[in-house]
Length: 257
Image 1 (cartoon, rainbow, N blue to C red):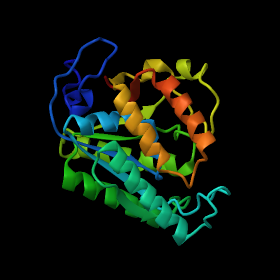
Image 2: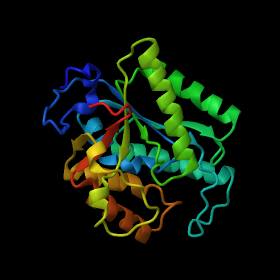
Image 3: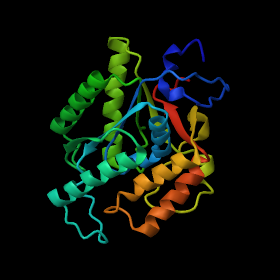
Image 4: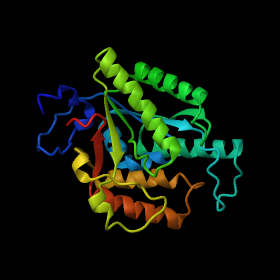
């Protein structure tokens, strides 16, 4: 570990492969992944499954209700019926990953860009971090994953809360952005939606996982039947597996590492 970044001790670094090849020892603790929609967790699914399998407490926080994510194949109209379906899918995915039941904040899908929604999101994220005291928090970086505005806003708010903790009370919570390496994604099979990749040099932490962890992640992704046909899901799984290359890829929020 670098002497300039002692806060990088959290559970996140269990089994991590860093550019300087230093490895952290198991530290225990709680992990919290905060995303915008049910199904966004697929970018870190194998890693969540691994940590749960190893006995760590893993929480998944989903900001919006997903009520506007209509797909013709599902035949569910936008609104409460779709929100209920997607909440059930999120619970199914959490079970497949072996993690805690999801925390559903129920904010408006595609409606976070208001003072009231952002204020509530900030309050809820701060409350949950204070209540569960995760040593590691995961979210999406400024590129927004697929570029969705909700992704960008959730990542911004989570960053605001964590950097406030770091600057205010000196808490040891560490925040990382999940992505896929651009170099690997150049040769990945096509899929939709497309994740905006990040140059590998910025993805300073790589968490290895087993084939069983990947299988659990794929099973979790299959829960989101309202959003993907089987053909679409298989294409996404193939692209993710190629991009992962046996590791989930993470970037420290402050560029440290």
